[in-house]
Image (cartoon, rainbow over all chains, first blue to last red; front, side):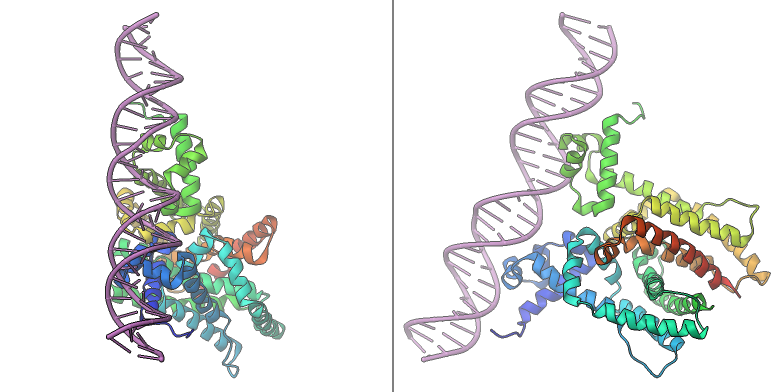
Length: 205
Length: 205
DNA sequence: GTATTATTTAATAAACCTATTAAATAGATT
DNA sequence: AATCTATTTAATAGGTTTATTAAATAATAC
């Protein structure tokens, strides 16, 4: 009856999260998850019944993190430009915490678009409202002549696009260039600043 | 002894290409490929021996297309800005022809980085040389004061980043917004222009 | 027309996979 | 201690998968 997750239940969730993010739904077996945990394979099903349900629990959580970082509002005291900078950087940092997120996200939705439908129901129209609010703020800047004509749609697409590339390309990059983890981390931070620069320039009237 | 591909061999390659691009290596079975072609499953192995070899043949070809569109040079008579615009647009158009390419590319390298190693051997150091040439051209513009300090590395990353996003997000976008194929195509063309605009602005001193 | 070679099929081995079952163990309750 | 419940395991059914084999068919050569 308790909502508390037992240690085992949590360990399974954690191992599954790691493996699903690394290799995706299809390429990860419940046998493998059990092996990672060090338990019997049937236990995975005992706690989560099906591989699908286990995956969904993880997927929803991760989607929230990704979307949330973009739509979160705050820092009302700052200027438009400062707020935007903060948003871009915090979105970048969320992905840096969980670098597999973008590829995971796009891959799984591609291979099973139905998952998106259920996500849509869960998150409801909160995004719609936040988007409208963001568009309002943007329109104000446009009216003031600080920003060229632009939809929040396009702006978000540009932000996501620039912010995910280093992480998408990480495996490719590391195989080709044999770059060290430390240097790669420096590259990331440089790109974060570069992205802010590119986006702010792109908004100038 | 002949190098000619029989009709059947070609049909298998074509079906495999379609399915691998749609669903990836792991999620596509040789049984499914055979079904798509309308032949016996053993035939797939008769012509290509293993699923891996069949995949590799396709993967290499597609990588070439993707990389090639970026590194191709030409239009020597045009200005730097015009050449860059052409490059961005032609890269975008190559992806539009084959919209699954970016996700395919990043997914498969992520799930099996070893593939990248073999690709590296095949393409050799041609990219290295083209990159050096591009860097030279860029440096000239920087020296002339037309472009701010910038590496060709960063520039290419920005181009790829902006150019792939519409295609990566296509399945997600279409589920959420129920946008028509026609409107989506318009969106793409608008983004192509927007990308050129963003990149040219990002280079200004 | 028969022999020879190439293509295609049906059948199947061996390895996996998910999900379920019954039995074993551990923990809590009286 | 005995009973009841929750957790964990071993075993396995019923699928799928890749790859191989031998047999059947088609194509080519002599």
